[in-house]
Amino acid sequence: MLVALALAAALAGHSLAHAPANARVATVRVPVANVWAAPDTGHLPLDPHLWPTPAVSYAQRLALVGHMPTQALYGEQVRVLYRRGGWTKIAIPDQPSPLDPRGYPGWVRTWQLRFAALPGRPAAIVTARTARLSNGTEVSFGTELPVERRLGRVVRVETPFGASWIDSSAVKPLPHTRAELVRTAERFLGLHYLWGGLSAWGYDCSGLTWAVYRALGITIPRDADAQFAAGRPVRLQTMQPGDLLFYEHPVVGHVAMYVGGGLMIESPNSASEVRVVPVRTGDFDGVRSFWR
Image 1 (tube, rainbow, N blue to C red):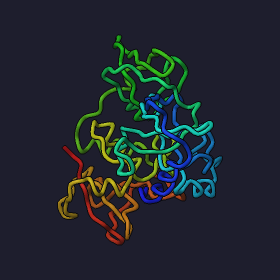
Image 2 (image 1 turned 135 degrees about the horizontal axis):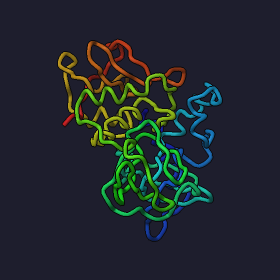
Image 3 (image 1 turned 120 degrees about the vertical axis):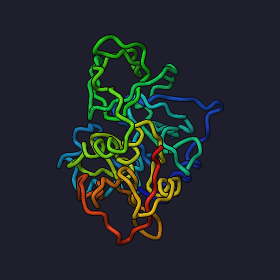
Image 4 (image 1 turned 60 degrees about the horizontal axis):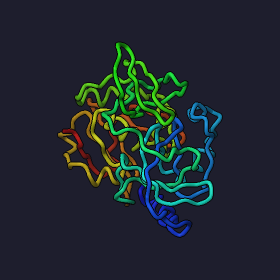
């Protein structure tokens, strides 16, 4: 993903509406909210189960490029910036971006937000590919919800619709190892690429790396060029599993994760799926590490 592709539209949003007198926070109330560079700039079915399927055509996937820069998951707390009709401009603090120091900016449908914050408790992160809450909502890998209490095999969490239960196995912490970074990324092998995708129903290249690192407690920038700028430089000859490889000129536009043995895992483009391939050195920008 390129920060530059969303920049013009993000800045243009400032002329569409005025900031409220007192900025507020809101919580995402749908399993995945599509975040757009500007209101009414693109379309994607609201049902995430359709995203990895032929119900979303190649032409529809290409039409997302430059228009849907990211997504936000259920329970995500966001900062409210502007309002325009049925749209709200937000910043997502958990998705660092040079576009806005408050978090990744973009527009969502207002009905997808609850204009209140969840309790400030320690949170559980969904580490299953998907999980179903007792309130009936199916949530994605990476969804983070405050924990009220734990009781045997279930965990009581706060949601935008009140308290709910989730199976404790779905929020089991992942081992903090490089090998786990690779194992977690490989769980999504075969998943269809989705530009802007940030859920188990579709990732783009940097969405996959962002989500995997975040699941292990390390928050990295959302987009590939920002990840390249923020990571610690590593030589190609000394990189380790979990380190990130970057591609495309003149601006970094693609990222993959090294898995070892001369191979890397990537979510490459709208015509492809998450895959493991040999490390490429053509159009190569360098290696960066975020491991700590």
